[in-house]
Image (cartoon, rainbow, N blue to C red; front, side, top):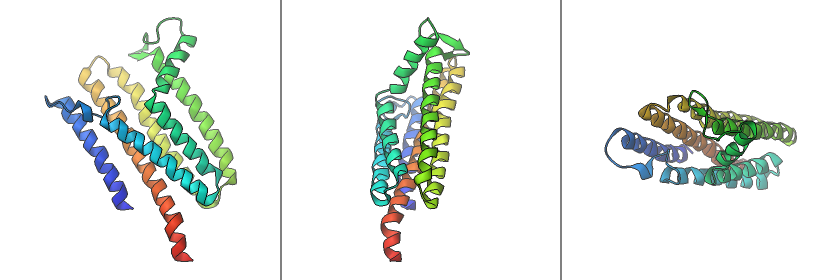
Length: 216
């Protein structure tokens, strides 16, 4: 199990270090940078979302617990949202509802109305997800509840980078280096958070498939 997470974290760190080299030197490693759309690092993140979705679905087939089916759907949604920039488009649409000007107009200290729209959209999705998790936990075993609570905490860390750091970096939009450095912190933090979540699901499925066989 340690080898699995070591490999994923090593790949994450490779992309993060390449991003810093690309930012701070004249060496062009933009295709490896974590803050580049459709770059190698972003595709690696997609693979992890899809991987978690499949791992969770296999856990659902093994345990028949609906909470795992929900997490499978959730991670497919996260993949779709990230790959199609859904939160950005929805943020723009929401900003047009709350503000008559352009979505890119500044609301406060470098934070645009579009960013406020994204925040509203993601908080709304987050509340719905948490309510569904609380409901589905009623149909889960004690061990499953303990596991899911850990996963929820890790997803909250992911959201801290995806939402909190993303908003914070807009405060430094006038300083190109700090702004781009904050983008690396944001995307790098998201990558490592999802890596830990992926390894948790992998270990859970491994234990379900093999540990119980050894006990029987």
